[in-house]
Length: 219
Image (cartoon, one colour):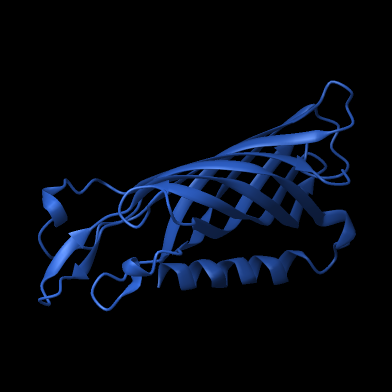
């Protein structure tokens, strides 16, 4: 219900504010790299005997992201409200669903409502630095080539929809020709397991922290 409300709210803002604006003047592209550390919400697996056991995936990932933003409201040359996504793809390592001998990865699609101030807020900004505040949901998809983790009893949970909050700082390079941004995004959720803990391990509070560096394209 919360996610549905969020999507409807974004749709309202988009249709309300974008009618009189030029698409080209309000469309931005970025690309860069990202690093994440995650403890995902716990969930139940079934043993061969059909009993529930709790499991929880913890890992770090390193990868690339590509960002697209559309300013749905221009408050001024230095302040805008946008709709943004930084689609990411990376390789992961850690425990539970992962092993060193297999190919494991994560594909994530965040959808954010964002506020921008200063550099990077619009093509007409004259500031040297900028600030971005964002919030939304992140659609995370995990995969592994190890088929033993994907059988009738031990199938791991590969899809997570997590709310998040983020903060970014944009700045120009020394030549004033290259606008860059560093942002951090914190994702959180709620443990879902009902069975006993697997292998007597401690279930931790779920949280994910993703740090990214990006550069604006054609700014």
